[in-house]
Length: 412
Ligand code: AOF
Ligand code: ZN
Image (tube, rainbow, N blue to C red; front, side, top):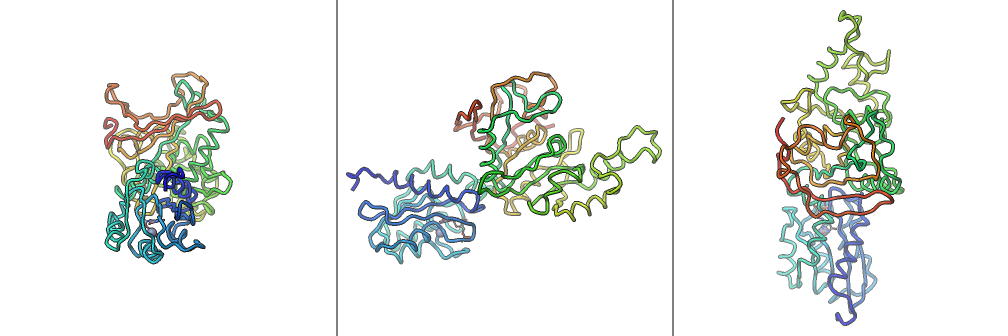
């Protein structure tokens, strides 16, 4: 059979390629691809195309025009054996008289978790597991993390100069990297279910945080804004009606901020600034602002504060847990440095995408990707594993997994 040159690994690679076509559309389900082979010929292909839709195996087997009796099936994830949104894949595998199933890796969904393979074996189907297991685990790193930890898989993404700055001293940051790297970021935004940024980034850049990739879909935008300082005329608020937008805030922090930044007319001698978040003359009080944001389509989540530090900071672990419950399996963390540090400290980041541009901007006050309080000895540095380096135009992308659990950085 293998005289023709195709190995189980080759077919599994095909299944993996097919699986990837579901990227962006199947979350929080895994990406799954399936290839059916008979007499050394691929007789059917399929993948999980959309959340709630048929699974890869069913798509492949239903579309197959030929007799599948005695065929072999390759799938990157263990076939499911439960009734979910669709009937179990194990049943159609039996129905279609598949002789042998090659599996990439086991499903960690407790409803499946080895039971799919057991069911097949008990019904006389041969099963071989662990074909390209590492690649298969990596393709669905988000799914496995979310399933096992019940927390979104978070990837911290930033673009910096060769001297480690994400902006000039003036705050100007357009653009650090070139077009190729920026296009790649758009594909990441398509891949991750949510995108998270701190209020500082919103105030500084007035970003849209959408996905501008052709055929892509917008991630849910999550803004960490303890004091509810978001400008009412920011692009985020303006577009909240059509792009799901969650603002995580804290009522006490917002009230205290309002009091401190009340207009000078209230008798403080003009020292305190106006709240920068208001559209002058339109939104005056905190309840009015809350009402205005809701009317615009923003979803407001009240989150407790994390003790310590000067400025009030949200409890990001609490927020991540809530995002997990909300069905957000993955987030792309786009800074800034303070939020990045909080997330890293809590052990909430699983992957880093660092884009490095071959340019220098200098300046002790120019911001860097991760701020907060750092570690004191190099031996305690947060190490990445499975590091990949790829050139993108004149820039470089370095990506890797963070293995360390919380806390990664010193407590405040
Ligand atoms: C497979 N093949 O293509 C996929 C699987 O809600 P449902 O019915 O779509 O079930 C989702 C679960 O099914 C998901 O958590 C995972 O365990 C499995 N996904 N299994 O055999 C597929 N997408
Ligand atoms: Zn299935």
